[in-house]
Amino acid sequence: MNEQVRAWVRAARHIAVLTGAGMSAESGVPTFRDAQTGLWAQFDPQQLATEDAFRANPSRVWEWYAFRREMIAKVEPNAGHRALAAFAQRHAGRLTLFTQNVDGLHQRAGSPGVLALHGNIAEDKWLDAPKKCCNASAAVAGSPPYCVRCGNMLRPDVVWFGEMLPVDILAAAEDAARECDLMLVVGTSGVVYPAAGLARTAAGKVVIVNPEPTDLDDAADAVLRGRAAQLLPILLEE
Ligand code: OAD
Image 1: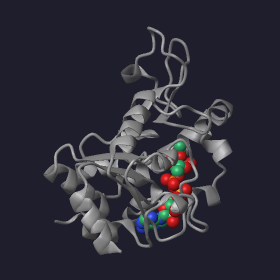
Image 2 (image 1 turned 135 degrees about the horizontal axis):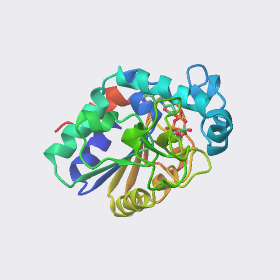
Image 3 (image 1 turned 120 degrees about the vertical axis):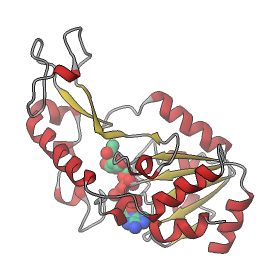
């Protein structure tokens, strides 16, 4: 099966790639839904990853993201991230990468033009529409930092449950899905929409890379039961 997928990679004029938390698992970043080790096995997303949760207890949510930021700052992109970046660099314009991950590891590996569907954990934005007084570099240090004039708070620039994905980024990913000859779906359980829906609109062949069954397996032309850092270098090498 690997050889078949390698042939599809070589033949494809345009490859789209959708990644999820399993992409970074071998870098040491926990996934969300793996039974023992996933973040949502330990923490309640309704208390940590919604706007209501932040408004109800800003410091608890801020501290949880601070803990994840520190963890992510200490890890490195893995061989899978590097293989995707190297392929895109060798073949300019032939690969479009969209990720649900907020960890920035694709970008650190050197992937160009990453479409970060769920935002970036290293960045902040204002909770409420910023007024003239809201100046992020002058925010009062705190947990979370806030505007001294109006009290507006900074929050992580990630998409929480119930929030829209960035419209332009989602539209670019939808275009790439509609135009691809091949889509690799790597390290995602495929349960969170609209991201998972991108795999269902792929014009070309769909290949799943995941050690476990996913909700998208029925949409796949090939399912490779393996790990991202192990398989991607094999699939993408010349
Ligand atoms: P999940 O935690 O739901 O799924 C992770 C997937 O990675 C599972 O299918 C695992 O089997 C697989 N996996 C584990 N190790 C792997 C490896 N080494 N190689 C390949 N696959 C591996 O994570 P996502 O599907 O990314 O949303 O979750 C989607 C969204 O739900 C996340 O973006 C996050 C979460 O709530 C937001 O933060 C908005």
